[in-house]
Structures are given as structure tokens and as C-alpha cells.
Image (cartoon, rainbow, N blue to C red; front, top):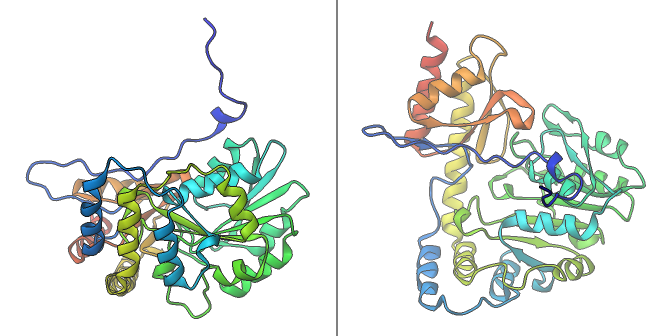
Length: 364
């Protein structure tokens, strides 16, 4: 019998696969280090705001996330009218693709960029063009070389997930200057709160000074609100206006909105998380490096660990770690079959991973 047929290209999209979750076993402690979730959890003030909002779940949210846009504006010195909030930055990425991409268009992403980019691109009938990276870092010249008259969007995660690498601000400016005026440069700054490099800028300056750049951000990482799905975008007024025309009017729930306001205002909680992450990222990089394994220098809340293609492989390490309750992220779907990504966890989890990898490398 005939049945509904998806639009052309939909079944060519590889579905997004999240990091695996640990399977609890009696008597064994497990650590989920596969999804870049903060070990600190959200600010207690965010939890309090969320619980207070539960008393009025019968009411629709305010349709423009006004209180949250104003809080973000205060935190970053931005015009709230140029901010859009969404159900995670993923929703905003998809809204951008829906607004600016159609059949026959192209969007460029990098070889090991976030998997949502090709999904959002192809879901709107456009072609995903992949630019190779250099040392697991976005390559401006490689991106510019692939620009054609059909290019409408360039996706750039900075810092990048899953590699943890970043482009200095001068390189991002060079990329913007080399792109045609009709191309929207999307700067995904999900992990920007963890960066302490003097040559890094999350994208606010470029958005403020150009008509064709946007920056997206999320409350899922350092703010610890992943379960609530809250993200935001800062962009030129004309792009904000266009995206708002297709954005659902109640796309951010009231509890999520109020929790996010409390989270962004608790700067002490954010700073503690950042300092903790920097310390243990450096410690893990050094300790794992002592085992003869390469760790890509990164600036986010995870480390990318490389294994040989035979013998002590990434797959074997993954199985060994999982057997001890340590769940990392395999990266075959990111084109990195010989690497594992490890979220910076609690001190206990971090030390256990280093100890377990030491045992794995020493095992016959």
C-alpha cells in the first residue's frame, strides 16, 4: 500500500546520535562523561527560580522571552531587541537554516564540526559543503575556497565541539572579510565561557559591526541547564526580525526562562566552574600525555584523546573504561574513529579516568 513519502533528501540525513548514557549496575558507581555536562550542576539560585515558577504552570510563557533577553543584555552589554531566545541554541540554528536556506543553496561547515549543522542544512533542501580542517582546527582559507554564488550560510563553532580547538579573533575577522555580503556567518559560541585566551572573542564585536554575522550561545554548558533547553542568538536587527517571523511564540518555557535569568546573574557560580574546568583540563592533558597518548590542546570543558589505529585502540579503550563505569564519547560519526572525547567531570571521575587509562595502556 502507498504511504507518505518524506521530502527529497530527508532520508539522506544521518540522525544525530547523542553520547551514550551509563547503564546503572548494582554495586558499581558510574560516571557519564560523554555529553559535556557540567559536574557543578546549575546555580542553586536557578533551581530556586525554577521551583518557584512551578506554581503557575497553567500560564503561557511571555512570548518573546523579554525578561531573559534583558538579563542577557545586562550581562553582555547588548541591545535586548537584537536577541532571540530558543529551546537550546539547536533550535536557533535550525531557525537560521529555515530562514536562509532552500533547495539549490549551500552551507559550509568544517570537517569535524557540530553534527547539527549538516542536519539543519540538509533538512531545508540545501547542500552541506565540508571544508577540511588543519590540525583539527577550522581553516579560514579552506572555507573561503569553497564559497560559491550558492553559499548562503557558514557555520563555525568557536570553540569547536568535539575537537576543543578555536580560531583567534583575527582569523574570524579575516573569514568574515573574505565572505560575500549575502552570506550569513554563524558563530556558535556554546563553549565560549570556558575560554581564557587573550586572542579570543566570542563574536559580539563582529555582530555589532556587520550586517551579516550572528552569534549563538547556550545555557546548557557552564550554566548547567541542559535539561531545560535554553539558548540565544545576538544578531543584526534585520536577521532577528526575519527569524522571529518563524519562531514559535512560546518556544521557551517560563520555568526555563526564569532559571536562565538566575543562572546568568550568578557570576560567582560561573567563575568557580570555569576555574575548576581549567585546572582539571590541564591536569588531564598532562596526565594522559604521560601515558603516550596524544591529547588535542583544547579550551572547552572536555579533552580529545587520540589512540593508535591498532592494538590499544579507541574502541578497546572505550570498552575498558565502560567496564569500570566511565562513559566517554566515541567519535566515529564525527570522522574521528581513533579518538574519544572526555567531559571534564568531578575530581573523582577525572582521577579515575587517568588511573583506568594507565591500567589500559599497561594491560597485556
